[in-house]
Image 1: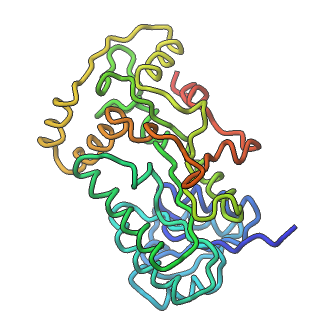
Image 2: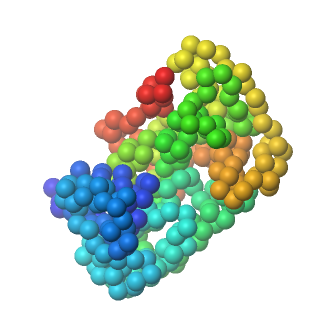
Length: 308
């Protein structure tokens, strides 16, 4: 058995990053997390940083805007995984430059978590987010850096606890708002599973220079199917309000920026069907649950049980 790759996670204390770090450490990869000084000294991050250390993760101090610290961190690993948030997507050009200079990295996973940037048909401001991800993809290709893009689709923790209901803190018990006609298919994945699938792909030649789509069949649901599943669980039929596309587009225009982004993403996912409208062709992509049938992923059905 070959030695497991050394993995550097950039953005490891963030929303999805912590699950990637956890999966890397649990699967026996020598794991490094590049953290800013202010993150390491942040009392709100103290427990997470300590958990990392307890699981054998090496904490490195550095920053996307400090070339030397970035370069030094990259030089000691085999694989770089970026999980930076939306605000830092464009800054990943610094990672690309450092990987190119270092010359030792055998695989780069940019922060492409979400759905396929090259196939999204979103309106603004989600459109700009996907364009930023696509620009990083082109920069990686231009430099000839080996890559894997992870399309994790909808984070379950963002969507299922409220059944995608705006301003809610729990799934609906009386009335549900459904975007569009409710028939477009979306994919909902538990964040811990996303971390596991990502690390599975690190040393897999089948995922080299491909998009890894995390689209397990039991997690593909239309809005209508999701509501029907929830109704079955609570033993009650909900009142349904369907929101037409024109109305959603107007809401996007009239909302504050944070709400605009969520609304435009949900329009893309639930009206346009941007997570599922295309076939995953071997020329560009592979599907995670097919590659790794040994992973016992959490289904949408199981995930919703905690809210009944």
